[in-house]
Length: 236
Image (cartoon, rainbow, N blue to C red; front, side):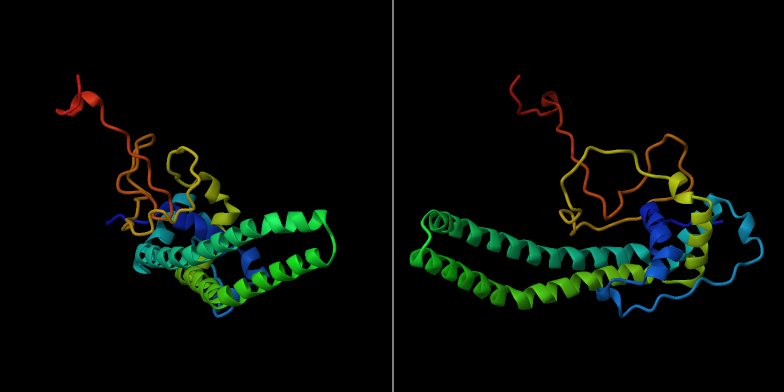
């Protein structure tokens, strides 16, 4: 029987995306266009499923719903719009830095001159806000669309049922996870242009490194420098 391939983190994410609590609390305003389906009725034998069987079945559904392709497109959309917000944040910070000396001076010498400085600063801030607002609204909506795209993959009645079963068995705690890596300050968008490939959730011996590239949402691993002796042009 063909082994289904799926990135483990997506299945773990499904446990939280599809949880009864998340359904009860509703979705963020930006995702209001989504209509979350209800879990399908339990099937005969569902209560006897192990965590591995639940994981494998969810993986098969994710494979059919093309989760890897959707996740790559979702990440690209989220990261491209995040760059817009980051640039706006930098622009606002630069403006504040130029305003600080005048505000400090105004605080030390209150009076008509200080009031004029404060008025000028407020006018500059309002002008920047008017300039940034259209692009910020568009970028925020774009990020929500990207999140909605990946949530839609999990919006499946069977996945909802399996996720509830997985929660009852606390399968997220025992699901396969990649080996720990060095802490990174990356937000996961640095490698947004990389082509993601799924990982197998089965068939890997215990303790063996996973085969295939890493989770597309995970930061790219740092490459190790080759020993100097391996470079024929290096100084000896």
